[in-house]
Image (cartoon, rainbow, N blue to C red):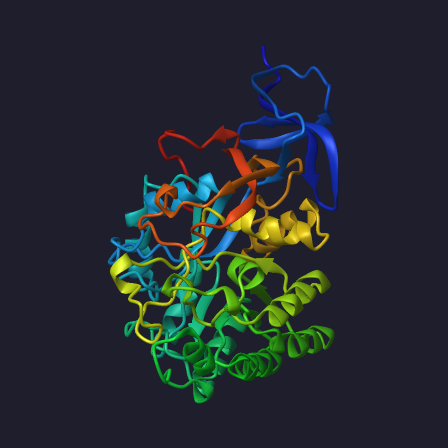
Length: 432
């Protein structure tokens, strides 16, 4: 009889803080042992990757699946296939752009019904905090959402309006009562303007970095006042790093993330509206400072903010085009391409894109190659190069800001709880 269901060997297994040659032994979907690379452990299935790296499956806590209601933009089947192909084994779905938005338990039930049986990777859900749903926050928490997203400025969809200052504090007081997590799209609406024309510089001028910093300062003040946990989504402006670092030193319960596009693309490289997102991609100097904030731990997570739409919404006018970048499948190689050029290793990548997002959402079975964790594993060829072709990506619509870019790092295989998920395998992802 086999001792294990699966043994995956690599001379470069990426553990927390180090790489080692190991054989990773799996039973019943869980990592049960880390053995020497040449240990002759019997298993029903064996895989020897040689010099190809073995990473923990990525955890992407910022994905807009948009189903039900806007399934033509994206859906659970297509989004999760793209995730698996990109080495992402767990996603947490955002509460807006679907209809209805996830702002009460019945909407969460509709979301789960739309996802059931269609997911190639494991899927969790965020709830939403909007004006008028204060009484729904605890029921949503009890129904299984991992936290709550709010906007401080218009979200882009009428059914998910922003919270004002008192609404933010009231929601955070409610979350503090059950130690819930508030996720904030932080831009101060008082500092946002309508673009003066259709070009990218005009769009960029309409959403200055100061709008982000002011909003972050408001969230810090609310977290300090209420004692609630808060997380700043998709930091694009390095001006936010100073108040975030100071708040952390003071013991305020606040964390922050950034996204692959802010770390790998600059305003100078923006061409068409496939690059439009909110907050916007800023200049090269700002990008360098974001990397410094990531290295210092002020920014803890790198997640996609995969926010797709149909191609017709990406009109040439930056003022009118839908804002959102599709990157779920290419986030890992995009970040690795830039990270390696700046002297960072795969252990940093695993921390930013797996361990830290898993900790943020409260997913103790995810995020690392360790005994007791789910056997979510990625064979990653960190030296191979490829050129992104939007038409070959697996998310629903063939639009991405990465089209035509040559990236380093190719996902060769992905396992979810010890089972391969790439290729034509029927979906067996779980709803968390």
